[in-house]
Image 1: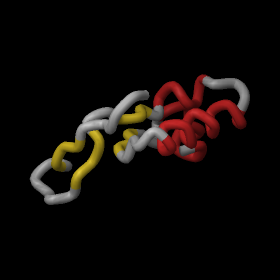
Image 2: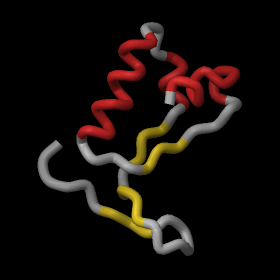
Image 3: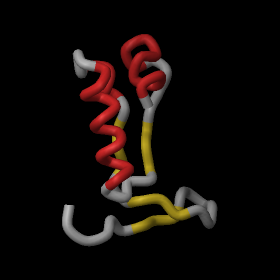
Length: 66
């Protein structure tokens, strides 16, 4: 990415998170665990601070990876 990811308030809270999120659903579909974790690390390295996930995604695999 180039430049900084814009920040937004998280709901009614003063906490700021990135306007762009990493969604967790697709993580459980990645066959290689190292690749899934590398994607998470790359997102953090690029400044992403908002990650969305749910236990129901792939019976908890996505959440465990994240």
